[in-house]
Image (cartoon, rainbow, N blue to C red; front, side, top):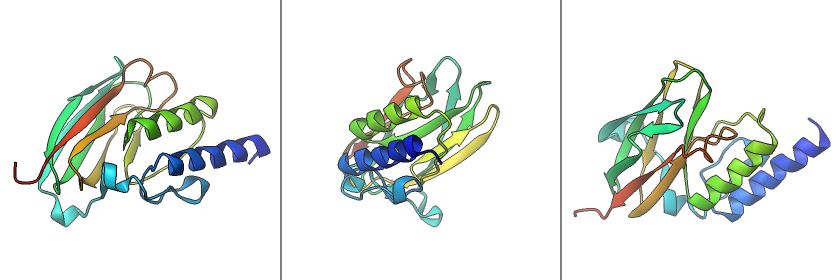
Length: 163
């Protein structure tokens, strides 16, 4: 690993931790837990209450791009890449996604696998199991270089429990 790449990976980890990113991950020794409350946490498959199919295409769109869930709900996202390019779906706050995206543009070869994301080659399908612990908005996007800027993003709107 080059010194510059290592520094960039460290900076990404620091930015995500500062943004209160996600549950523990693989780059820079893991992410902060502060905003876990904002976006939720990895779900337990046995507690899945619903499955949502999401399609990613080379038109730089997610279908659906707007998803509604309830606070406390554990959702299985079955994500398919219908394109010929590599795509990913990453859940997070807008601030954390933007910080991560900037790092991806500088280091497009960066490999990472966190429970809040799935990266897929053309024609592949994967999944994320996620529990939404707080009401509000959880953003998602494709952080492959150029994709987020092209509009490959969406939101999960988390309604208050019982409403």
